[in-house]
Amino acid sequence: NDTGRNKITINGLGKWVINRRSTYQYDYFQWVNPGNGGAGGSAGSDVSGKIGVGVNANGVLQLFMVGEDGRLYTNHENAPNENDSWSGWQSIGGVWSSSDGIGVISNISGKLQVFLVGTDGQLYSSLETAPNNYSSWTAWDRLVPGIFPQGDQITGFSNQNGESQLFLVGTNGTLQTTYLTKAGAWVGPVSLGGDWPHTDEIAVAMNPSGKLQVFLEGT
Image 1: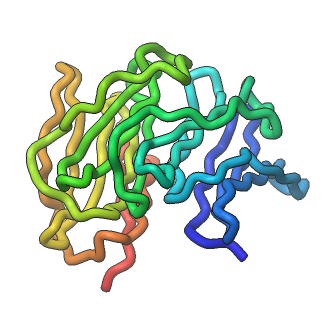
Image 2: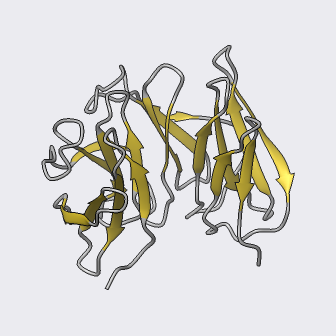
């Protein structure tokens, strides 16, 4: 019996890697060659919380979860596409709610960047100090003004020009977005309207014209 929702990421071999939570609070994964079935295993965790998944510049998958002590933990493949060989969980700090959604993007410099809403309702971020530097992260920094709900889902995406953009629901139920300019400054948040539960999963895709398209399930 699984608890929590699946996170699906495509790794360097074109395999779909499905990360899901079990009732035993372990992180399980399944890698699937499209059309050829799949195999699975465990990344071996007893941390609790939602799962964030990122892909490093070299194709190494990296997982993020909030531990029972409130700190954010990460675990990565030991090499690209080694789906059954993982580094082990280590803390990258902070104090977070176990209900927090974890946004993960690969920014224009090739570094992974993670985003969470703090216990004070502020949006925070940390990023790798260098591309593929799985264990070295910057100090947590407040990203933009504003207060967001605990347990907010955060979805990040890179625009056609390489700029990073985040989507999350504000305390007033509207969809909010913030984006990183080429000058290195985050702009926003800007309201995109609507009335959404803050626990909504937010799907983002780039259509053939190069525009981002956002999908949510209404109340």
